[in-house]
Image (cartoon, rainbow, N blue to C red; front, side, top):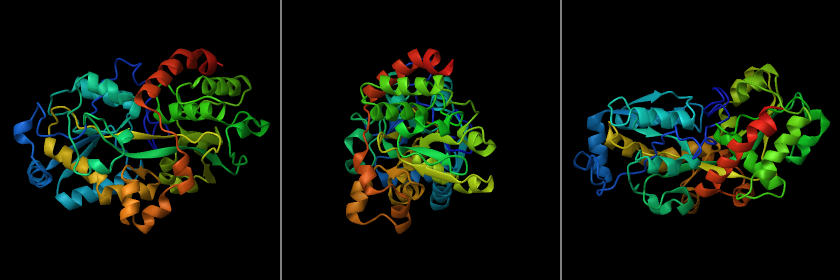
Amino acid sequence: MSLSVSSSRRGFRRALAAGAALATTALLLTGCATSSDASASEKVGSDLAEITKLAKQEGKLTLLAYPRTWANYGKTIDAFEKEYGIDVTVKSPNASSAEELTSLKNLKGQSSSADVSDIGYSFTESAIKQGLTEQYTPSVADEVPSNLKDPDHNWTGAYYGVLSIGVDANKVDVPKTFDDLLDPQYKGKIFIGDPREGASALATVSAAALANDGSLTDVQPGIDFFAKLAKGGYLVDASSNAAALETGQAAVTFDWNYNYSGVQSEMDEAGVDLRTTVPSDGVFGNYYAQPITADAPHPNAARLWVEWLLGGAGANNYAESGAVPARYAAMAEAGTLTDAAKEGLPDADTLAEIEFPTTENGDAATTLVVDQWGSKVASK
């Protein structure tokens, strides 16, 4: 998820592109469990107070793929442990969404399974279809926009980000648009993760499509744009965005805005003059969902974690990193965003311009990218 981790998960490429096209990715997307949940209903609290009490009795919470540098999760996890006295274990922090789903599928119903995951939006439908989610309606669900939650309560997306370009300004000028990247100064200096595996890489292709007369329903122009860059010698290989910038393999990368803020100090230490920008010709945003695992080993702690992410503390922590909390509009109106949160968020104009894809858009984009990326881009 963040620059400091492998490109397969967060380190600049949260896996998503494999989405619906990867049958092996068993999505464990589960939202908040309601009293009508078929599983574990007898051991799950009926309201937040009871959930909190039972969660403390469980005393443990296992999360899957929550890097500490991704969306301020380190601070959020520490605060949760302190608030409730619940020990949090993070399994495979750098796992991709695809890898998360595989783990959830393989460990389904076992005590070693994770309680909650953090996955890209295009995996949600797959998770539901595979029975990996558990319905739950958070106490603040009414303040979450409809496009950030499942209508049947199988998952809720607690935050979203804006696709950004991260540049080492010591090496190149900071581009303001995708079109700027066609300048010869960027030849041999651009790295994009594999959009067949990573969420931010797929988002990059979608954003490039918007910048080239495409749309959320037609990402072909985005694929063609990167095919042009590949043919022209603009693209380079790297193990991750962080490695690309730190080693000088590349000077231009793509990721969610909040991941760049999470690794600013790391880049400073490496001598990278990290500058970021939201391409004005392709403003694209998307969320990650935090589904509760079906038959979660610690069902109450899982629900309490989702509540924590959506509540004031979790939401403000997200915002401090630049991740936009799902309840942003409601919190802004109520005046509950902290000064640090306001400072960390993208400007209001950018937030207003964000185009969000539907899960159907994501499935279609994934299918097209899986079909064409190898021959048109990766092989060049």
